[in-house]
Length: 303
Image (cartoon, rainbow, N blue to C red; front, side, top):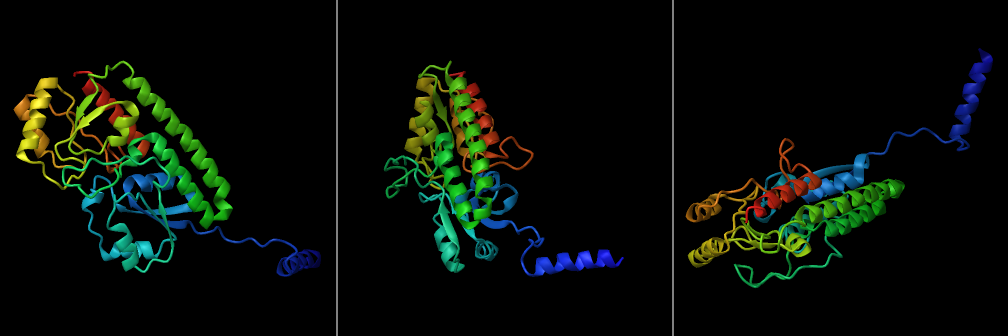
């Protein structure tokens, strides 16, 4: 009994003077705020269990029209990293961070991608860049590397974990890119025409040689003129375009009118600026893209 007590005291003493490591509780997850659902998914994939992600603009919600509330400012204030897309996708984000007196790190996830220039029309005369960079999987590789680097700078102990997670995910992105190319390969360039609610597929179109037409242009809040709608209807009839889709966060009324005037059936819902809820086919970035590719190809096959 005395020998056991002596052993316990000796070990305790060694710990106390620093000769043996003490057992410390697990570190708290790194609090991170992502501006919208797609970025939230990417941060969670890279961060894994070492991060706690709060997403401001949730599934099926429009980040363009988002109006922050005090609870959102509080979430940012309590985080150590605020991840935004940039390229004026969330014009409210920096203002929200300033109003919250946020002192943490802000990451512009799109930093380093090759930015697509916007046409100076349809209500965006002052826009300089297409913000929808995630529509090209090769851009998301850049997003993921940026996220891993920022997380590692705030949590050096987790650097190897973030690196491993990002490398694994990048392989999945490369597989997605090849899957898309393989699915599109049988389609002629003439078949590769699609009508969508608003012009959010610019990066996707450039990578995979598809022509997207949208009555609302790149800004879902700007209503097209009657002349623009009439021109689009004439083009659908002339080119016999049957691939017509509405997006999960868009009002389907305009496209419904166009399909009624042209006799073309409206295709399944696509997920573009936001993920779906957990029980829908676009609940993660990879699922969203696979769903969109599958539906787009099926639609273009009818052109």
